[in-house]
Amino acid sequence: MCKIAVISLKWIRPAVFALIICALALSFAGGMAAYVGAVYPEVTVVLDAGHGGFDGGVVSAAGDKEADINLYITKRVKKRLEEEGVRVVMTRTDDGALGENKKEDMRRRAEIIEQSGADAVISIHVNKYTQSYRRGVQVFYGDTGTGGAFAMQLQSVFNTYINSKYSGRSYSALAGDYFIAKCSVIPSVIVECGFISNPEDLKLLKTQKYADEIAECICKCVRK
Ligand SMILES: [Zn+2]
Image: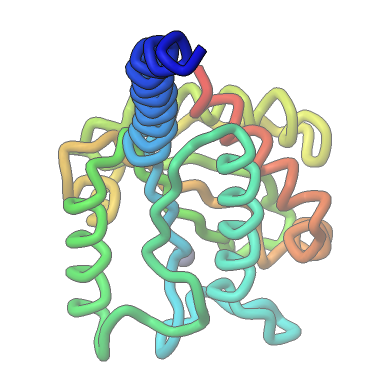
């Protein structure tokens, strides 16, 4: 009896050892997959909340600062993109600027964009016009940048889902000399989410519903 038991153990031990090795290998492979998925997701987007700190951007008649509205909308866009598994890099996450003056602030933003390895850069702003009737979402891209096609796609989605609904006016994406939209080779756009000089737009710009509509439009274009 004793001899049989010893023989059995002799075979059982390597079998158990092999099972443990298999289990370890499987869990390691699974862990690696999750790790790779977390570190190298499919899409990375830089979200740039325009202005901040010493630079409040445009201001409404009642004193609402563009920089605050930009940050609020940018955070909603971040949330929506992350729900879709997009990796988001923010240039700023609080009220502060990224430098002590405009030049330093823009240089720092360009550095973050350069180091991000992103697939797209979206700079969030709010517009102002001398006449208060103008309203709606408008997209811009750098005249020497690579964001033209992305800007046109975004503009088309904004026209369909937001401009037709609120202002009834469609826009075309426009090229211009915008540093943030051409400081890298990454397709980059500036989204002017509405006009702070229009009372209806201003009201919308401060609501979560509108910020989420902007986020949804951006999400539609980033997923494609
Ligand atoms: Zn701005």
